[in-house]
Each structure stands twice: as C-alpha cells, then as structure tokens.
Length: 177
Image (tube, rainbow, N blue to C red):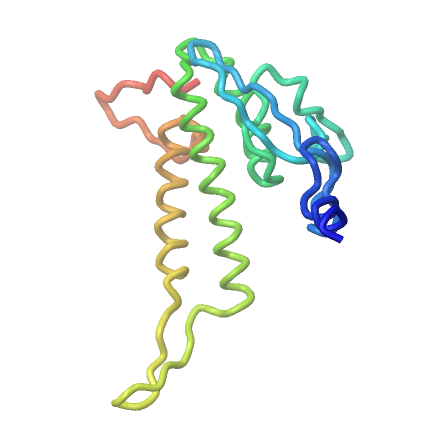
C-alpha cells in the first residue's frame, strides 16, 4: 500500500500534470537580451504561444525579443510596442526593462478593473456610529496604476504626438520621431 501512495503523490518533472488544472509539461528556456546575462525561466505549456490579433497569427518565438511572460495581456502589449522601441537609434537594453514594467502595469490594471466590475467601488461597513460606506483599496490603486502607465508611456515615447507639445525654445526629445 505504501508503494501505491508514492506512485500517485507527485507527477515527475517533464510529464503532464493531472488533477491540478495544469496543461502541458514543465519546460525551461533561456531569455537573453544583448548586453545582459541569460536568465533561466521555467513555465508550463508550449514554448511558443501564437497571439491572435485581427485574424493574423504572430508567433512570439519569431521575434528577436520575445515577451518574457506568458500572460495574454502582457504579450499583446509587448508585441504592440517592441518593434517601435527596438527600431530606434538610441535603443538600449534598459528600454526593454521599462517596457516589461509597462506591460506588467497593464496586466495589473486589467486585474483591478475586473475586481471593481465584480465587486463595485465601495462596500458597507457597520461600526459604532452606524453604517459607513467605504471604498475598496483597489479603487485608489487603479488610479496609481493609471498614473504609472502614463509615466512609462511618456518615458518610452509611446504617447500620441498630439499629446506632447513643444513650447517655443524647447527641444525635441531623442525619442520623438
């Protein structure tokens, strides 16, 4: 009987996991950028996931700089902006890190929006002085995330041209086209 317990306790690495809502096998790959040491990343599932956008399939593994995370929103934002950023003359590895943070902010924004849609912006609390309506902390957090998204979009030069204005005597940023 003890042998049967040990056999079904855990699936071995590299084999499909069952009963845990996991699909695929565990895989590792090396993420490398020019001027940076390789980083080993582990995840489950296939090594490349097609991203569908306007009936067009883009294989993420074909990009010179594939997205470092597998979240669909992360991958969508990454693919939208990576070509613009890497094509610039002053491109550096640090710009990829800033883009990664921007993509993470969009993922967080989506999660906060989903929470607010499901639960609303406020809740009722009963205390000594009676019923009080309080805001969820996610309401304040979503405002912070929106502000940070705007800051990183500005940092990476991804704002619309009509949104920046050059005042008389001002110089163009090196990111502007």
